[in-house]
Image (cartoon, rainbow, N blue to C red):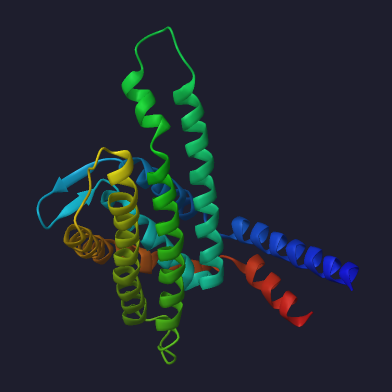
Length: 254
């Protein structure tokens, strides 16, 4: 029995590995690259608070998070929520690897010049990395599942502009709110008071950060989603991802 379970587990892992490999070959490189780079840069920018008032606080990650969510919406629309979740975890993995490399680079001493400021940026802060990763993974999966669920409601015209914009706007608003709120609560309510000499945001600030951040990111999505819609329509016309779709069909038959 144990041997049979081990064999089944190996078979499942091998199938998942193959499916991920095919997906990575199928997702257009520009979108995959923009998505991954935006996730890495979001992590760096999150170290800086841009605005902090009594009821409002925003960090630098807001400048790029809309791009990550737009890419997720495009991938979900064309490849499905499961595929988008795979790409989300892949981007998070690349971000963790990049953070490790940055940490090592920032920790290596140099006699060429004074790199104290740069080293501080490169090494980053461990609890910001942890919080941003947790928030991104939860909100990313939530966004992808919501996007797909809303899209399934448009049975008659699944490829219409209305379908794309509705599923993108609703999932982005909710996903971004969750991302901002989880990050703010973890960093500025849980970790910062302990490791930043009592510095923290209030709960109203965390909520307002989540709400205003989601609104600002939704505005960016509204501005750029027409481009996303046209790109996904071109993918459909050109048969982008055929290898992946054929792989999925073959797996279902087995």
